[in-house]
Length: 360
Image 1 (cartoon, one colour):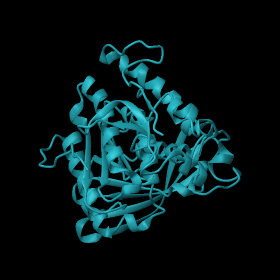
Image 2 (cartoon, helix red, strand yellow; image 1 turned 180 degrees about the vertical axis):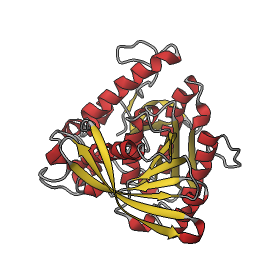
Image 3 (tube, one colour; image 1 turned 90 degrees about the horizontal axis):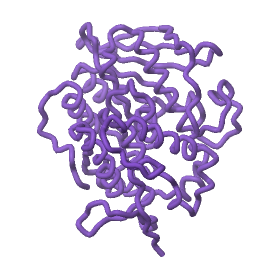
Image 4 (cartoon, helix red, strand yellow; image 1 turned 30 degrees about the horizontal axis):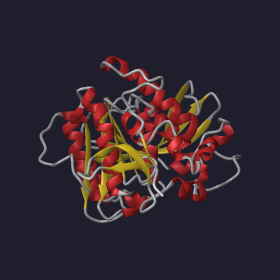
């Protein structure tokens, strides 16, 4: 049996008042984020007073091209919580736009071809290992960030917190353009990057890759016959991840309160277009794969359309994009070139021939 209900309206306050003019959007954004953090993710740990970046060593990555890497130990003060960061710098003096990626635990993602492509476009790249923050497994909360900042937040919130601390640290390096900071990640890293971008306005471009259920697509959706988004939502039973799948297999990603909505998803005061919209009016790009059925390419398109209404309302429709390639679940070189093309357009004003309003 399918249940159709009204999709939460992004441009209507919880008390029923419309968001009448763009200046009212920040208040509605805060309302959406509060609900998302209260129920789904848990509130991120607090920002420390300061973050120090201690250089451990520097080395040549592509010597002939002048591309270097430096490893740092980042430490949050007070408390002394620390984790590691690698920063790849292109040739030149900068300031360089910066891409932050938390997928340091998946080394196959950041190949030499990727590093060369990023540096060759004049972008710096900061890489950290998110599982150094908290483990990606069900475990007692007696390790990592959980001990430094106790609270009822899930692993995704902890990992997003680390993205923000990388922004803190790299802002001190001098060669980084603080107006052009980008966050990305693949799969669960894409889920994290989207949460990090939605909750930190210092981030100019948020670019989740193949992020799947709960972040890149609607948990609940209702497709119209013409392929658009209907005025309702339908509990999905045919394809892709569902809330029950996530809470059975990876409950530690979330706040405990999300379990209250198991088999009651239709009662959630938000849907997953809400998190994408919370990035607005800053730039947002979803990179997807047509063969990544578990991540529901069609559902991702629907979240894009719903969030795009907010961008249109704010006069920022050119800052939201979606791009599909052939293939399956991966973060490959083609995805990185897509991100760089969108960043060049959205942040640098360069023309592009890519279609950033694709259908799967």
